[in-house]
Amino acid sequence: MLIFKHAFLLSLVSYTVSAASSEESGYVITLKPGLSDRQAESHYGWIKSQLHVAEVAKYHINTFRAYSGKFDQQAINKIKSRPEVQTVELDVMMTSSSVMKPKIQKQKERTPLNTELMMTSAPSNKEITQKNAPWGLSRLSSLKTPGFFGKKSYDYTYHSSAGEGTWAYVLDDGINLNHQDFGRRVTLGAICYNDTCTTPSRHRAANAYHGTHVAGTIAGSKYGVAKKAKIVDVRVMWDFPNVPDKDKPRVLKQLGFLSTTLNGLTWAFNDMRDKHRIGKSVINLSLGPSCPDEKKTFDECKDFAKSYAVKYISQALFKAGILVIAAAGNQGLPAEWRGHHGQDGVLTVGAIDEKGNEAPFSNYGEGVDILAPGVGILSADFEDVHGGRLMSGTSMATPHVTGLALYLMALEGITDPGLLKKRILDLAVDDGKVLSKGVEGRGKGKLRKPPTTKRRAYNGIQKGKPRSRTG
Image 1 (tube, rainbow, N blue to C red):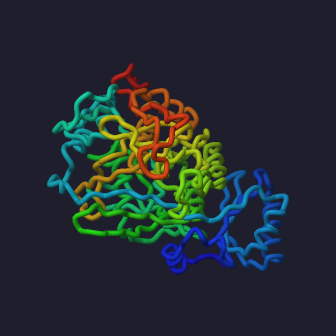
Image 2 (cartoon, helix red, strand yellow):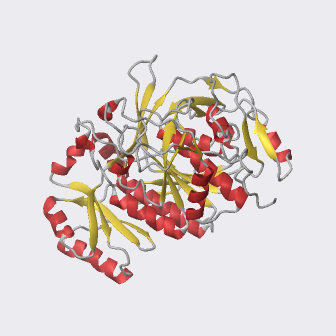
Image 3 (tube, rainbow, N blue to C red):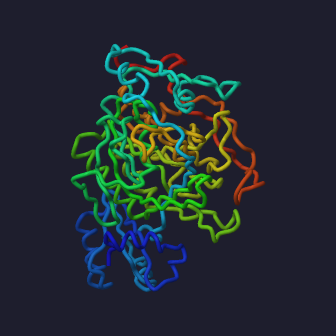
């Protein structure tokens, strides 16, 4: 009954949102919080004996319990009638679409710039300035958005602690561990399907453009915010590139399911707990459901693929001491329509461009907590272990904030996810230039009420100095 590996990948290719009308469809069922082990097992036993389902994929973090499987409508109606069931939803596709420009930069330096040298030789309580930094890093350490652009070089200033002793669990399409910008600070955590997570003996990522780029922004020696932090690669999506013309940007579709995301989040929690990393780690979630193409109008997309399971598992992670930092999405729609945005347990990130303007594609509104650089972002290239590549999206904005979270955890000793989120928001600068109405897509011409926050991510280096544990 479960979708095992090869069949799972095949289902990604053939997936359509109209699957709900087929004889059997994938569903995710969340149980009510606080059920005992005995009550939960009783429910699973009922599924096996009464619905004749041999096994389901289970996800459990403290009071959160959910499972996924394929059921027909009659079975789903019976499941919905059970008093221990909280929500039932389709096992929707999770995607992350990014526009990737042709490879633009091959670094000749074996060690990018001289940041590695500076990190190893600098005193333990010192500010470091990286010359010729990507504009996104520079903006993160700038109190003001500059009034001029297109500079030949930007500077990024940060404290020498640089995220040391912290971890980001990156749920994505994989990471090229061999890229020189990572050193040996990226480890292969797991490859997660809907029912199992496995750790292969060697690196197998193929076409992991998205995850490699995201990881580079979080913790790369040249491209990264927190240059001493470590990354754990948790693969929950697979790439399907579409190349219409060699001279046009390549459009990547990273595809997975809600169930694979839940399994990856569960694996990440267990790994943090077992390795005593809770209070030292965050989760980067540069993925989410998208309003499907067949929904042509703005109103048809309302509450599109709203996932209660992601909302509830994020709350469980937050209560356990882990902050989820998530991309707002790239369709120019209200971010709160995706369900898990706009709540305490998630820090939701929208995108701005180099001029500080809210990106037209960025999902918006009260579900967005903060803005960060997400247009024309230079970071690690999957294909070239010495090279960089430009990509755009809220997926690119999110790792700036994830890196900032690790940076502040190391610098200020913050271990509580609520205090960490508050600190990031308190440091933010209110200079984002947000849109009053949509300019593209289904939301074109629609007034944005309320508009997105003006808060822009900032590391505090010029504003009263961040609170260092060492003085």
